[in-house]
Length: 227
Image (cartoon, rainbow, N blue to C red; front, side, top):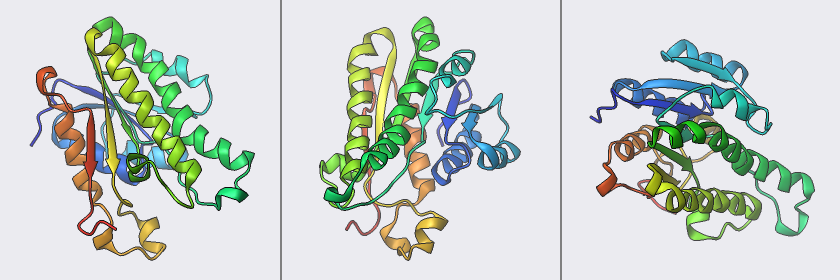
């Protein structure tokens, strides 16, 4: 098991299925946690996991940046995001805003919040969750989702190349399929075609323990049956 006893990790989207699995893995590894989320989901996470800080923030709002700047962390794990499908010719401005606000703007604000302290301490890691469609650069019936997740990847990898010499690294996690959540099961997806969130969490923890001279910048994780 990874040992993260000296780390303070911020998890956004606290209370979500992936964030919960990651929080459990981090707790088992001894990490200190800062939980960022909204409403009831955040409260469930706070009740379940010990945290040094619990922040109820709307990361689509730029005012969240100042709140995040007050918290010092070694790592940001950004799990906030949204998915939608639509025929490409029927997509409208609201669809565009929904995908890029949820997937890219939230990441931008979270990074702007944690980055000043990371640069000051010359140490930090920012891990974002992209998508299999983005890795393949094609998402039929989900073009806006795919484009917004591709933006996540490009932003984090650009950050990594720009700031690695200053001690801040970036890493992109690509779940190469749907994650096994109650919602996806309710939608009729079969468990064997989905990715175990606990496995994703272990992958994240592994990435956090890599030394600078053996770091990981991209991680693709597949279900048992890759469709």
